Image (cartoon, rainbow, N blue to C red; front, side):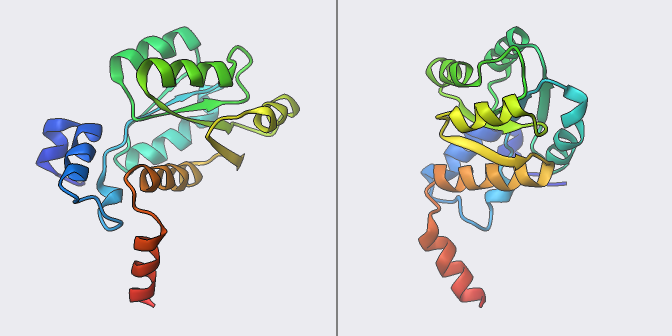
Length: 168
Protein backbone atom coordinates (compact mmCIF):
# COMPACT_ATOMS: atom_id res chain seq x y z
CA UNK A 1 0.00 0.00 0.00
CA UNK A 2 1.35 3.42 -0.90
CA UNK A 3 1.84 5.69 2.06
CA UNK A 4 2.50 9.22 0.97
CA UNK A 5 2.00 11.79 3.72
CA UNK A 6 1.28 14.56 1.21
CA UNK A 7 -1.51 12.51 -0.35
CA UNK A 8 -2.97 11.71 3.06
CA UNK A 9 -2.91 15.35 4.14
CA UNK A 10 -3.98 17.03 0.92
CA UNK A 11 -6.01 14.47 -0.99
CA UNK A 12 -5.64 13.48 -4.62
CA UNK A 13 -6.24 16.69 -6.57
CA UNK A 14 -4.40 19.02 -4.21
CA UNK A 15 -1.46 16.59 -4.11
CA UNK A 16 -1.33 16.48 -7.89
CA UNK A 17 -1.45 20.26 -8.19
CA UNK A 18 1.30 20.63 -5.56
CA UNK A 19 3.48 18.18 -7.50
CA UNK A 20 2.72 19.93 -10.78
CA UNK A 21 3.70 23.30 -9.32
CA UNK A 22 7.04 21.80 -8.31
CA UNK A 23 7.42 19.96 -11.65
CA UNK A 24 7.46 16.62 -9.85
CA UNK A 25 4.75 14.76 -11.78
CA UNK A 26 6.51 12.47 -14.18
CA UNK A 27 5.66 9.32 -16.08
CA UNK A 28 7.37 7.43 -13.26
CA UNK A 29 5.08 8.68 -10.49
CA UNK A 30 1.80 9.35 -12.29
CA UNK A 31 0.46 6.00 -11.06
CA UNK A 32 1.00 7.15 -7.47
CA UNK A 33 -1.63 9.88 -7.77
CA UNK A 34 -4.77 9.21 -5.79
CA UNK A 35 -7.58 9.83 -8.25
CA UNK A 36 -11.14 9.93 -6.93
CA UNK A 37 -13.74 8.63 -9.37
CA UNK A 38 -17.53 8.57 -9.45
CA UNK A 39 -19.36 6.25 -11.81
CA UNK A 40 -22.94 7.06 -12.75
CA UNK A 41 -24.35 3.81 -14.11
CA UNK A 42 -27.68 2.28 -15.08
CA UNK A 43 -26.84 -0.96 -13.28
CA UNK A 44 -24.46 -0.51 -10.33
CA UNK A 45 -23.90 -4.25 -9.96
CA UNK A 46 -22.65 -4.40 -13.58
CA UNK A 47 -19.79 -1.99 -12.81
CA UNK A 48 -19.03 -3.19 -9.29
CA UNK A 49 -15.99 -5.24 -10.34
CA UNK A 50 -14.68 -2.29 -12.38
CA UNK A 51 -14.96 -0.02 -9.33
CA UNK A 52 -13.27 -2.63 -7.13
CA UNK A 53 -10.36 -2.89 -9.58
CA UNK A 54 -9.87 0.89 -9.56
CA UNK A 55 -10.18 1.14 -5.78
CA UNK A 56 -7.53 -1.58 -5.33
CA UNK A 57 -5.19 0.67 -7.30
CA UNK A 58 -5.73 3.51 -4.81
CA UNK A 59 -8.31 5.24 -6.99
CA UNK A 60 -11.32 5.40 -4.64
CA UNK A 61 -14.41 4.82 -6.78
CA UNK A 62 -18.05 5.45 -5.93
CA UNK A 63 -20.99 4.06 -7.93
CA UNK A 64 -24.31 5.91 -8.16
CA UNK A 65 -27.35 5.18 -10.31
CA UNK A 66 -29.64 8.11 -9.45
CA UNK A 67 -28.81 11.39 -11.22
CA UNK A 68 -30.05 13.59 -8.35
CA UNK A 69 -28.00 11.64 -5.82
CA UNK A 70 -25.05 11.90 -8.18
CA UNK A 71 -25.19 15.70 -8.20
CA UNK A 72 -25.35 15.81 -4.39
CA UNK A 73 -22.48 13.34 -4.07
CA UNK A 74 -20.32 15.14 -6.63
CA UNK A 75 -20.92 18.49 -4.92
CA UNK A 76 -19.91 16.96 -1.58
CA UNK A 77 -17.08 14.62 -2.60
CA UNK A 78 -15.62 16.56 -5.57
CA UNK A 79 -14.20 13.57 -7.46
CA UNK A 80 -11.44 14.13 -9.98
CA UNK A 81 -13.26 12.35 -12.80
CA UNK A 82 -16.88 11.31 -13.36
CA UNK A 83 -17.72 8.39 -15.62
CA UNK A 84 -21.15 8.65 -17.24
CA UNK A 85 -22.89 5.61 -18.71
CA UNK A 86 -24.45 5.94 -22.14
CA UNK A 87 -26.71 3.05 -21.06
CA UNK A 88 -28.42 5.10 -18.34
CA UNK A 89 -32.05 5.62 -19.41
CA UNK A 90 -32.67 8.72 -17.26
CA UNK A 91 -29.45 10.56 -17.99
CA UNK A 92 -28.70 12.82 -20.91
CA UNK A 93 -24.96 12.27 -20.79
CA UNK A 94 -24.16 15.31 -22.93
CA UNK A 95 -26.19 17.76 -20.82
CA UNK A 96 -25.13 16.20 -17.55
CA UNK A 97 -21.45 16.39 -18.51
CA UNK A 98 -21.86 20.06 -19.50
CA UNK A 99 -23.57 20.77 -16.18
CA UNK A 100 -20.70 19.15 -14.26
CA UNK A 101 -18.09 20.93 -16.34
CA UNK A 102 -19.70 24.35 -15.90
CA UNK A 103 -20.64 23.94 -12.24
CA UNK A 104 -17.73 21.97 -10.84
CA UNK A 105 -15.06 22.17 -13.60
CA UNK A 106 -15.31 18.39 -13.67
CA UNK A 107 -13.67 16.04 -16.17
CA UNK A 108 -16.27 13.61 -17.52
CA UNK A 109 -15.84 10.37 -19.45
CA UNK A 110 -18.64 8.71 -21.39
CA UNK A 111 -18.66 4.91 -21.47
CA UNK A 112 -20.97 1.97 -22.13
CA UNK A 113 -21.76 -0.62 -19.50
CA UNK A 114 -22.76 -3.06 -22.23
CA UNK A 115 -23.50 -3.09 -25.94
CA UNK A 116 -27.01 -1.74 -26.53
CA UNK A 117 -28.32 -0.05 -29.62
CA UNK A 118 -29.47 3.10 -27.79
CA UNK A 119 -26.14 3.40 -25.94
CA UNK A 120 -24.20 2.98 -29.19
CA UNK A 121 -26.27 5.72 -30.83
CA UNK A 122 -25.68 8.05 -27.86
CA UNK A 123 -21.96 7.27 -28.00
CA UNK A 124 -21.65 8.15 -31.69
CA UNK A 125 -23.80 11.30 -31.34
CA UNK A 126 -21.92 12.55 -28.28
CA UNK A 127 -19.50 15.45 -28.48
CA UNK A 128 -17.86 14.69 -25.15
CA UNK A 129 -14.13 15.28 -25.14
CA UNK A 130 -13.52 11.90 -23.51
CA UNK A 131 -15.40 8.79 -24.64
CA UNK A 132 -14.29 5.24 -23.98
CA UNK A 133 -15.07 3.03 -26.97
CA UNK A 134 -15.88 -0.64 -26.50
CA UNK A 135 -16.64 -2.51 -23.34
CA UNK A 136 -15.61 -0.82 -20.14
CA UNK A 137 -13.59 -2.78 -17.60
CA UNK A 138 -11.38 -1.84 -14.67
CA UNK A 139 -8.15 -2.09 -16.70
CA UNK A 140 -9.55 -0.15 -19.70
CA UNK A 141 -10.86 2.62 -17.44
CA UNK A 142 -7.51 2.70 -15.61
CA UNK A 143 -5.54 3.07 -18.87
CA UNK A 144 -7.98 5.66 -20.22
CA UNK A 145 -7.91 7.81 -17.06
CA UNK A 146 -4.13 7.51 -16.99
CA UNK A 147 -4.03 8.98 -20.52
CA UNK A 148 -6.25 11.85 -19.35
CA UNK A 149 -3.85 12.51 -16.46
CA UNK A 150 -0.86 12.46 -18.81
CA UNK A 151 -2.62 15.04 -20.99
CA UNK A 152 -3.79 17.11 -18.01
CA UNK A 153 -0.32 17.35 -16.47
CA UNK A 154 1.49 17.93 -19.74
CA UNK A 155 3.38 14.67 -19.85
CA UNK A 156 3.09 14.55 -23.60
CA UNK A 157 4.64 12.24 -26.14
CA UNK A 158 8.11 13.80 -25.97
CA UNK A 159 8.64 12.58 -22.42
CA UNK A 160 7.00 9.26 -23.23
CA UNK A 161 9.13 8.85 -26.36
CA UNK A 162 12.35 9.71 -24.55
CA UNK A 163 11.52 7.23 -21.77
CA UNK A 164 10.69 4.50 -24.27
CA UNK A 165 13.87 5.25 -26.23
CA UNK A 166 16.03 5.08 -23.09
CA UNK A 167 14.55 1.70 -22.12
CA UNK A 168 14.85 0.22 -25.62
